[in-house]
Length: 313
Image 1 (tube, rainbow, N blue to C red):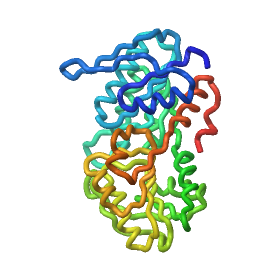
Image 2 (tube, rainbow, N blue to C red; image 1 turned 120 degrees about the vertical axis):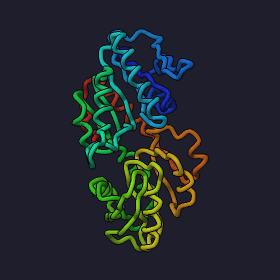
Image 3 (cartoon, rainbow, N blue to C red; image 1 turned 45 degrees about the horizontal axis):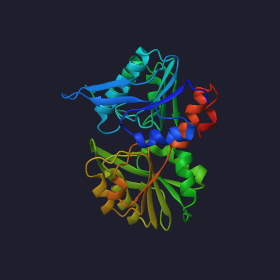
């Protein structure tokens, strides 16, 4: 590969960045991302990037504000160091849940963050499974929104599921469940969920049949795990033989680990878009799949100005 491709990482998910670098056959760029004593982020790029095609791997996961600021400051540093192009590689795009005004006097944070990323110097954004597809329209630069479906699908096909049913935990995920079910050769079901407050969900009804089936709960993210664990109880009550949860982003904040461990879930399948740290040890049900080859292939094609269309499946 030409030497002009340079891959850097903030502190959000260094293991994933190293894995991507290994897939590309390049070394991880030399950058110092630290903090001053008062908590301000201090960035220094320790190698020449003039005229380079720079890719910055930084999911905006917890602590979200720190990791977002790291990304913005790094891109500003690359822009001022005369990088030819800067691509923000954000496997997980934080602040995505507020993508429209659903009540008076609330912000649209996904648009605000998009503006910040563009202003900081991003020429392109590469991400995986945005919470809402319309977020792509908030950017004034090209956005490649890849899907983790092939990674999850390959694993789940090898699980020999009995009479599988793909279950959407809410009405908003029906399209995702339908597409996944089609590739898996499975029926779909929907859980009618009513949310009374942020991070609080109440399962009401199940639309579809799951009796005697292996149910696959599919969502883009698992945050506090309230929705998923309540859904499991509803599915078991309706006669599901086995329940597996699958998601692209395992945020797992607050009581999530405890809820998953105490739930009737047989397995939780996710990807490493967010660093898992010790969460796999804390939750034996977690199965983490890597998206490094997918991101590496996208980075390679973007760098070579080749088509990435075949990756959108």
